[in-house]
Image (cartoon, rainbow, N blue to C red; front, side, top):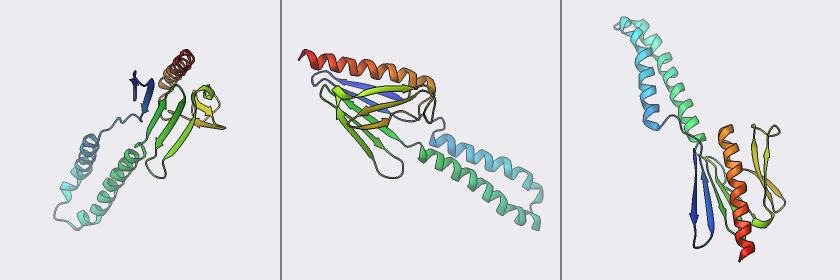
Amino acid sequence: MPYQWSEEERESISTLTLWPHQSLPPRGMAAFVLATFTMISLPLFGLLGTKLLWALLPFLLIAVFGIWYALNRSYTDRRILETLTISDAHTKLHRLNPRGQDQVWESNTYWVQTTLHPTEGPVPNYITLKGSGRDVEIGSFLSEEERIALYDELRSCFARHLTHAGST
């Protein structure tokens, strides 16, 4: 799954790091663009030495550039990183956006409510955290099954921190 938990036992801090799944790594993108260029240019070999080749070549290059641009844009749009830090007293969510400002949300752990919205929301099984008068989303880029699993893990993590805070 594209998220990872880390625990600091000594300080009783849990950290959740989430990122979107990257199905096409940069090397795969380069190979795809090169293969596309090769496949599109194969029919042009019959036109070598003619003026028609020069008439069709700009369209070939525009098509390859369009594919490269779309894949590169998709790759940079997926450069999101969310970090949720939960301690016994304090919870902080930090989201690094691919373009634009970073977003930070903080609340007292005792008042944080984790909510799963099965149908209402931009995606099915939408997860929100509520605290300090704000609702914030978490993991909206995950798959539906991953969000359900994450919701259960978040609830148990918050419960563990609240019982730990009550026992100290």
